[in-house]
Length: 415
Image (cartoon, rainbow, N blue to C red):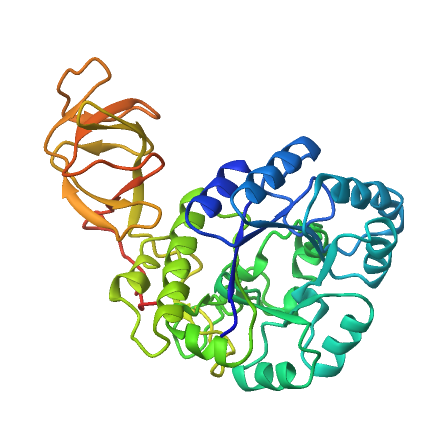
């Protein structure tokens, strides 16, 4: 049975902590340059060193993204970046560009090299060629189905690891190679600055009728003709393992620490349940967890056929929000740091590392002076709450979002 590494994203130290707390085997993140996500804070050298130390102390690995397509003027800074990362102790680089691959082998020869999904590896010849160039892993193109992945596994060196995406946002372009953002906003997606114009709503104007609005529709369902569904493979760990995959990757370096916690926790549980009994059905609560984060309608991507698009809207389904984070346990009560307004009497759902989520009503809440309060309206205010059992530090308390009667909620399909 293959180990099945769980690989989680981190856009900053807080999200790194969530990934490690909730069971990631490895975390991928970026420095201040050369990573495909410029919107998160990312990690400077000192932060990267602390990240590596923290991960290694917990038996996890750090993979550093160097997966942009750097221009000539950027290349002069790359050797120092790579050699410094080797000194810090990162476990692997994720690269797309062949020149970056060569520089990595030259200036950081002790660091493993993983080939990014942006390289568009869709066959065993390409995968084997990268292995011959010194790569220890390829992140396969998202356009492959399970049968094609199994064929690649059968016809490549056993030492070559195969990594695939299992959850998160999907790009409408082939293997993330897109120029829409560049053309429409001047922000280069291939250098980490995508404005996501594929999520926008579009309409049509005929050149001889300027200003006259023509809606763009497909089967009358909407105008978001480029908007991809979100990937979710939580129910299909056995099939991925059977295809010969080594690493399961969660998308989302620009997502919140809460997103990282929930997705990592769910896939950790799914992998562990599969390893205990490959034929047993997944516990129902595991898949349900993924409906408690902001997401678009879910799909299994190309693994079983066409993934489909979201034509009705460009936004997210959002049914839950984090009410508070547990910072300690004192005198039989949880010490909470508020994240969103909540009230006495609200039912909260608790997410803790290594535990099955459970719910309970907040029947008694107090301020930091132990004065009873009816609500927690202030950001990061300290609240003490009576709970049915002790909560672990870092536990997340979330509450269902009840939409206003006038709100129209996008139709949701389960994970």
